Image 1 (cartoon, rainbow, N blue to C red):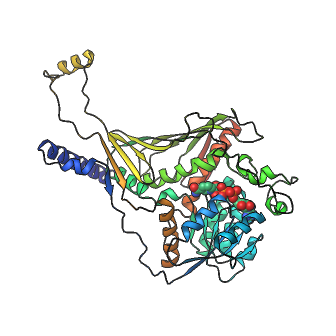
Image 2 (image 1 turned 90 degrees about the horizontal axis):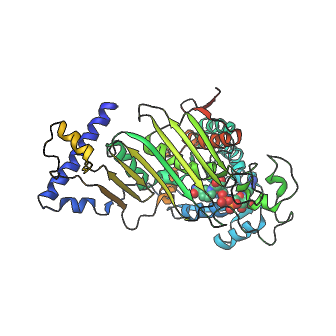
Image 3 (image 1 turned 45 degrees about the horizontal axis):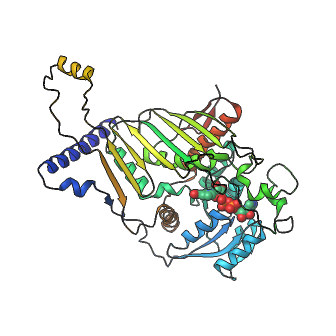
Length: 456
Ligand SMILES: NC(=O)c1ccc[n+]([C@@H]2O[C@H](COP(=O)([O-])OP(=O)(O)OC[C@H]3O[C@@H](n4cnc5c(N)ncnc54)[C@H](O)[C@@H]3O)[C@@H](O)[C@H]2O)c1
């Protein structure tokens, strides 16, 4: 593996050097390569017959479930037949959007009992993911389950077991992993574009109330329009509380805080790009600084994660940050840093930065050079390109669409998805352990290969 990496690294550097030489010769080759480089939409697996209609149902028809369904319905041959939700307003909205002939219900088992449904999208709050996923697979339904795959670290094995036992297709919804941007980053890292990976970081900056989970509460919210009993039936019993229902992310009974909501996306992308199975040490810090609205989760969270050396990658460190009181707002990024450069990665763009050849006027450094025998240190050098941006081709439908195509193709071909239950658990676990570290005020240890918490 090491030799393979070294040889692809050499070939990547050779390509860059050749490009540099071409520019020096005035051929304009590099200009065409490096400026907003467009990487073509790779052949995607949509060649199979859309005549194989796949009937889907949505369970949890809020913001993301609606988006997921809109995206799924863009894939040829996919039809929505039913929607389940615990709030009547969402069922009414679903009929308005998708037609009065869709079947609607508050009871997800009524969806699972229907013979005409092949697959379900599960986009409920996190505390329902495991149970509905397991029940759905045992009922013979393929599952697209939103991230994080599970609400508690103990819940992962049951989903993995159900997937193995039933053989149903199960995809977790961190859609970035299917994007061209993530694929390109994977390819660049493998080719040695940034040398040896040693560090990665991710960051979210948010500020607006809607972005930080203060969602509007519908005027008609009441125990009559909301099935509160079912909502809390797998967690602590409490009287009806509209905030706990419509702003569930702020409460630990239902949500998984910043780590489960946001960090999990970066674990998924990072693991996909690096072929990693996960970190072995997790440490979090943070606090509730501003949003004193009754929330039980911090609004500033920092996580550091140690990834051990594996066959796929060297040991490296990851730093993740999330700030919901960030006056600059609107920033999200994932960066991978190696010994020879770095990559900024989004779903449709990768910016590769390579080290400059060091060209210093520091007298101390120049003196060192002289002593080392490089007498003519001030002579200018040929520089390799410093920055290359790879942009997705115009018209690219994006990671969410690719992720759905990946799911439906696997269903039709009895194939594999990018983000199965094992992948999904390995992405969710460090996020959930990050929360445990924050609340326990101590590092957490994880065996990512065996997928077990390690007691120290
Ligand atoms: N992949 C992404 O980019 C992304 C983005 C946003 C949210 N999500 C995930 O999607 C899920 C939903 O998030 P959201 O923002 O859409 O929340 P939301 O509150 O807008 O929607 C959740 C819906 O589920 C319904 N619900 C609750 N319990 C249910 C149950 N037992 N059965 C049926 N319906 C039930 C609620 O009434 C609500 O309509 C979460 O797990 C979240 O982490 C993923």
